[in-house]
Length: 342
Ligand code: PHE
Image 1 (cartoon, rainbow, N blue to C red):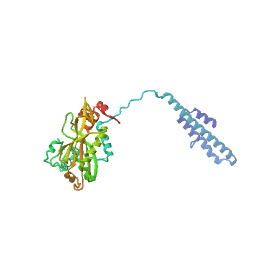
Image 2: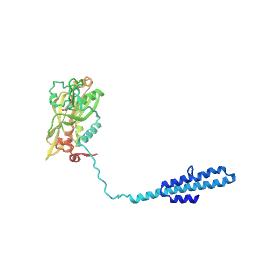
Image 3: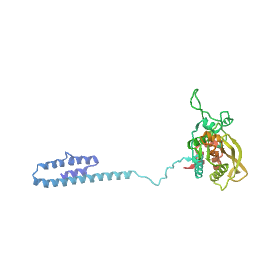
Image 4: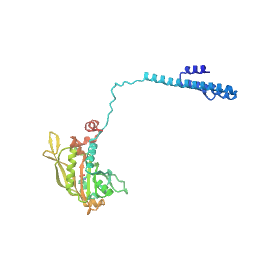
């Protein structure tokens, strides 16, 4: 028996053949298994020696089967190693990575700078009710500021019961939402998209603003000035900046100021913090008591400042990008040139 099965095992060329041999010898109805079963009918003296011999044989065949199986696997692996090989000296395939858009980059930068001076980030919807976008900001329906905003209005079916909505024309409605949600004191910025019907070298129908809002018991314009100077210094990475506050008017702040930053332009190279030119960078002021009231904050207890800044303009200034429209044309060459490594 031993000779027969060992020969059959060496003759097996694959796993299936080995399995056939195993079944023939050690399977339920295999030759050796049947012989084991016959042990019961033997005389006790014979049973002992015969049984022991059968067990040895069974183990031997089992071991031979395992060895043959391992040998087959080795051979298969060697065959693969011979045919499948890799030239590790070949150059790698270049992987085209996307870039961070300058607007995203600037949003990240300003969020980090304001976080350092205690401002959290607030958000609001881009499709905004005209109450949040205008009324709550002290711009009632007949106010001329509504016309100045070049507003996109959402379509309304006749009899639509929902309040009228617009594409928000500024991030100021987030002031109302943040105060209504969190109350005072509060310190937040709200970066995001805004929309106005306007298109030329420096205007696109969609652009980005960042709103700032700081309300507490004794916040003044001095705090506003410090905050903006601190931000500009950090953002433009210069040792000092000079800001000029010009009296202005916004319905939602009183007093109001537009803020210019000193810069120089030498052969198209803009430098912030020096020179004899001024560039307007934001609108600001002390939050109007009516705005606090509309947001559920008591103006007898709380006061503070707000500002609104153009993010795209900041990106153009800091990174020397000439045409705003190119920001939103998704030209891959532009994105690779002005984008940032992820
Ligand atoms: N919302 C104003 C604008 O879009 C900017 C602004 C914000 C002014 C906050 C004052 C206070 O022009």
